[in-house]
Length: 310
Image (cartoon, rainbow, N blue to C red; front, side, top):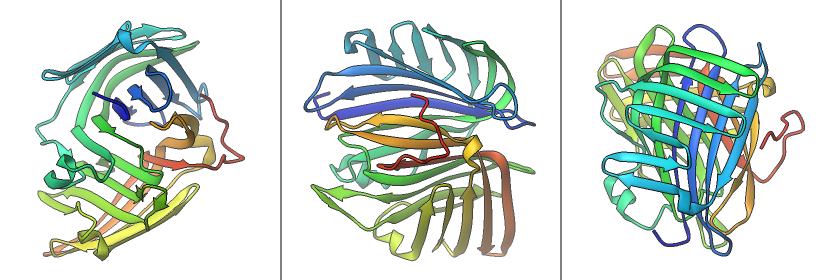
C-alpha cells in the first residue's frame, strides 16, 4: 500500500429493544503529505442513559497489521476479524463474539468500479446481518452486548468522498432479515466536485433492489441536510422511496483526516429513524427502523447542536 491511501474496518451494532448502540473502527491512514497513522475508534451511543461517548487513540503505523486473507486487522492491542473483535486501549476495553449470517457481501458499487481508480472511495459490507455478544467498556460506561444486530464493514481508497450522506439498516422493525445500504455522494475529479449521485442496495422478502453505478443513478434522487435525508429511485421494476432522520442528541461529532492531511467533520448517528416504501413486481411494502439506522454526514461545517467528541 502506497500513499495516498486509507482503509477502515469497522463494526456497529444496536441493542434489540432500546436506543443504545456501539461502533468500533480501525483506520489506517497513509497521507500525502503527512505521517502515516493507525487509529482505533470506540463509540457508545446511549443518549437516554449514560450519554454518548467516544475515544480515538492513534498508534504508529508499525503497530498495524491489515490482512486480506484471512480478513483481519490488528492495531496495537486491538484486533478484528469476521468472528471476533477484542482489545484494550486508553479508556476502553471490549471483547465481542461475531456470528455472521448467511447473507453474501453487500457491494454498493459495480465490480468494474471496485477495480477502477474512480470513485476514489470504495465500500463493502462483509456481513450485513450479524449477531454480536460480549462487553464494551468506555470510561465508566459498561455495556453488556447480548444478541445485538449489526454489521461488519470494509472501506478503502485513495481519497474520501468530499461530501456524502451514508445510511445503513441491519434489520427493520418486524422484518429482521431485510437490510439497506444507501449513499448520496458528491464525488470529485481533482478540485471539481460533481453533482450528487444516489446509490442503494435494498434486500427485502427475497428481492434485491440495487442501483450501483453512476449511469443507473440517473433514475435516483437524494437530498440531505443535518439531520434529514430523502432519497428514492427506480430499479429492477421497483420504485423505492425513503427517508432517514436523526435528532441531534443521537448524533456524535467526529473529525476525519483525509489522505491530503486535511480534516472534515463527520456527524454520525447509530440511532436514526428510517422509513422505506417499496412497490412493484407485486410487492407493496412499508419498512421502518426506529432509532436503529446508521446516518452519517461528511461535511466541512460544524453543527451547533452536536459536540465534536474526537
